Length: 293
Image (cartoon, rainbow, N blue to C red; front, side, top):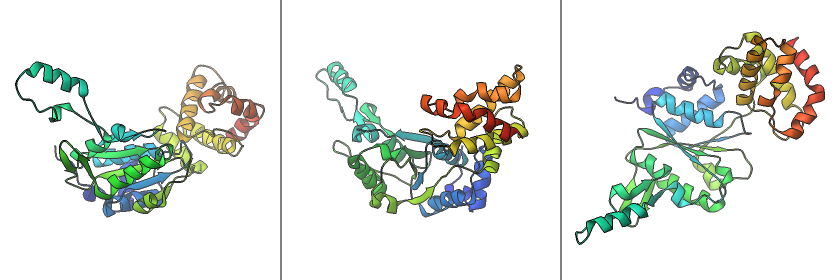
């Protein structure tokens, strides 16, 4: 099966938005433009925003619209080159040496090489999209390694030589902005900030992604979530939580709980912090009634 080229799919920001919508991801004009430019300019796309606004989902939708596999590198404190680039399978190498006896064996053959996300994408850049998720959770040393990779799209393996991408890989980086990223990395990318959607767009997202939720319910959930996010919460609910809340409340309503009560009983899928629950509980009834009005 021949995959469509990125240029064929990304003919305009409007075409990108339409393809994303077909993948159940609603992108506004600014986001679809940033994706379009990143693809056409051959530059990494840096998406920043609060947790839960849809950064990772955007990467999944981009991979789907291109018909490519998404290779995800989840960053964390202490991540190193071995987890991002490659490793040698030492156990298999030792076993192969024992079985070979006096015969020669190439212990640096491909069968002993464990390709991590960056190498996986280099080997098949036209079949895969690289997602470097939550780059802000890594340290500055790893960020420097990633910057070097993004500059040349190649990896040097001492035992094998240099492996270069045969085509420009598509790379998406996400950041929750828990720390500032290096200016050199920012300059290398097309940048876009994803904020929380307004009530109308969030209702449309809920309708698109929820299983069996009525339009009135989606609008009520969107309005209530907008009001809840305006409070000083430690962990404001994301879009995914809003979709889950709409689904959960609908299930409870169909099981016999009236609407205000269904929303209250399902609050655990929206708010997932004990202090936030305690804070919002006294106001929840009023928030839901206003949203349903």
